[in-house]
Length: 330
Image (cartoon, rainbow, N blue to C red):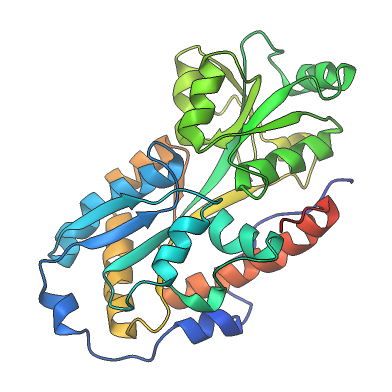
């Protein structure tokens, strides 16, 4: 497969998908239980602790609690390529107390790849797009230090190098396949349960390569425990300007995941707006934006309708890419 154009388009310009529109309940009063209760709001993370999604959720929870005037807690529900956590939220009461911290895997990749997915887009209502996250290709120090040299080695030993993933439908695997195909190399994937397990295997020398979000790649790079060869984003990271993007080497190799908040469908629109306002207000704080950038994430913060539009755009963008990759999961 040749280079594929996967650039992220703007948030506006495409109509809302029917499923997402249906998930947005009509405006109404916030139920007293939501507006006045000391009951905590649960941010359900469909990954184990330690990865980029978990980092985002915990940073956000610390800020949303004061904005809402009630506790906000993080609940990790990993398993099934994010299906376990997503299904738990889809089946939860639509009362504004259970919120999914979703990534691109959950609501973009899984619906496009999995034939028998236990949840549908119509099961959720969007709240806010939180951030966008490019991936980093982290390699062992014993491997070449530049992209051209790494490509030359990988081409000379097809399939000899391995890399960690969160499963076939995980965004880091999709990014690895996209980049490998564009560069004309082949590596062997090894599945782990979350970024933390992958990183542990990498640090132990079991894995040659990682394609992970910034939170799992930046620290090993700085500690001399590995080397970031390139980023899959549209532009270089401001704090590592010397490291190129793969898009500079082969135009079209942009692969970024995202994080957002979703609630069960039929949640009152007033409750959705209240959660969205708390999230976007938190993301306006400069110190939080800088903290997220240090973790490799670009802060966003949108209203529910713009997030719905973004989700529609992401599905339209990745559908032809995945079809060309010929990936399908039962």
